[in-house]
Picture 1 (cartoon, rainbow, N blue to C red):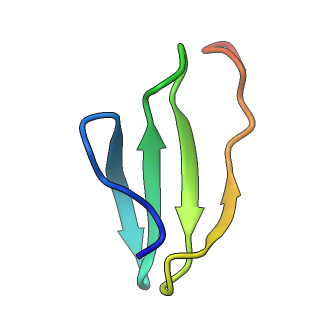
Picture 2 (cartoon, helix red, strand yellow):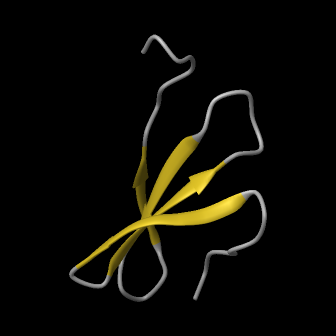
Length: 51
């Protein structure tokens, strides 16, 4: 698994062995998506709550 799950990085969704992990280390959470092998395949690009 290439991603870390801890207090600031939590799994929020799993589907078909793909995993979405919320990163709470910044002011607004960012969601990273990983494939079944744990490789990063994308993320949200929101920079504030309004976006």
